[in-house]
Length: 304
Image (cartoon, rainbow, N blue to C red; front, side):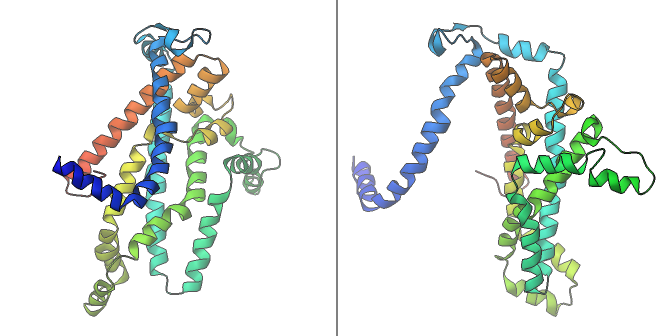
């Protein structure tokens, strides 16, 4: 009882902080937790006329249907390979850019480079995909025009399934590297300047400073962001993949999110698409927990 009184007094004393927390808490409850009740239609044969509660339970029928589908393994592989490829390429580029900018002696050059690399982030996905299609056009595209200068035949890039992942990932690198580097740049500013002074006195080269001061200094930030990225391996962006998708590259461009959209909304099979989406979220959660545990076991920072 005494503890409750103490907690009540503390809450009354710091009521402003509880008011600040209230709005994001309401947002999470309304838009993140309440919709979870809809997950049950993944285990039902959902009928609009009967509603969620009135629809018939079918157990794991929708999950079995997905895994027995001949295209399910291909879709899962497309999602994982595209996401891991994106992380493996995008992640180091942002760190390299941040370290390079941190070493730049000229502040004007540093700000100019930062602005140039940051600008593509503001381009909308629709505009970006339109640019990709225009640049790779077989007749008018700049890429094919450049290839033609070497006497080579034009390539229909968007129609080749093998090229879909490369186009997706490398345009993503161009668009997001500058934005992602800001977090590492902020982490680099927290490193004690005395370490650089000591390294200078010891005669360390720039490479040695990067290896022994910069990279260890941002190590915890790198680990946290890597864990967060791994939590979204199966939830790679829907918009860009869907807009770049066409009948000719469907073999590699069909990922779980586009599959859910096509089956759930276009074919109105809500139960099946919910089951696939639920499976997707479970895998993300397992990956997040696994990577977090591995990070903590190796003595690095974890999310919790």
